[in-house]
Length: 191
Image (cartoon, rainbow, N blue to C red; front, side):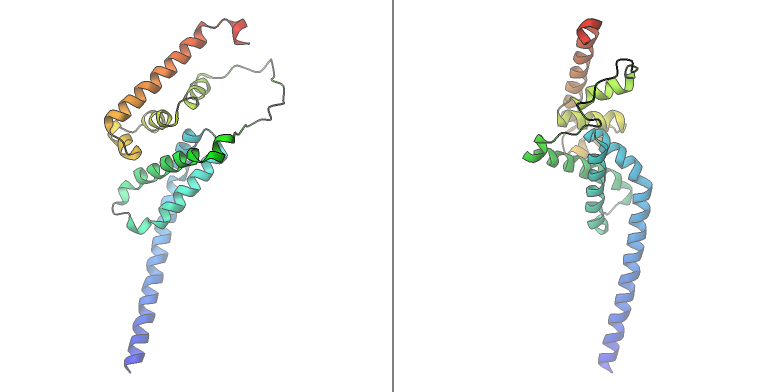
């Protein structure tokens, strides 16, 4: 009789565990569906490449899933995932093979269309952001594209608020200098 009770307890425990796992998976799936577009936008702003951004989000969500039970406050999940995105993006660029790899949306041997309209202001601004060093770019993306506070940005990047301020200031100064250089070029010098 004792073995039958033990076996019944194990089956009940397994059923409860399966229900908990189903609820957990459903909860994670709902979070993922609701937040994936926003996370993809953040990843794209960090990487500048759609395919790399998709890979980055996939990696971040996989890491989040593995630690979903450990997340104490579900209202803080967005910051946690953004931190994963930034850390994963930074670790991608530490790998030697990634430094040699470049992506392009068009083949480089294709001639430019001389009658094509000029880039919009947003595209020009984004081109400047893409030239920034990794840390400055992350600070700009989180502060101005994601509209986070300095404290939230500092928490995600794992740095002090002062570091966020200095990285943002340097990035904005570099972007202003670049805009100034372009403004001083004559139309003939641009070509």
